[in-house]
Length: 135
Image 1 (spheres, one colour):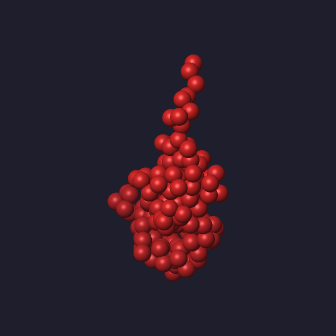
Image 2: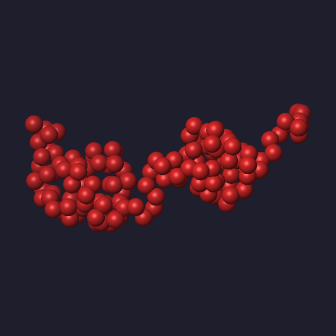
């Protein structure tokens, strides 16, 4: 087995990490760990975290990762989101809006409690789900 040619090995610096991040199409940490683990490792080594490296490259981390940062969901945001969903059943929300569903469970204890906190009668909404599934 041959040793890799040291002249072909990429020298990672803060500058080369930033250049690679700016050229990348997908800056999700999970994605980069899979397709370019050396970039991911160099980014964490030089900047302390993937997030710090992405931000050093000039990107807004929250927009890049496409998900809410911890602490985003609170009681008021859960209720507003439930209002927008109106009478969607919990399995729809669990599949289509997992962050909202998880936040509602954490904040209110159950999906029913979250629906009721938003001012809806859970039993009448639930009856609508049953009628929708079994007309």
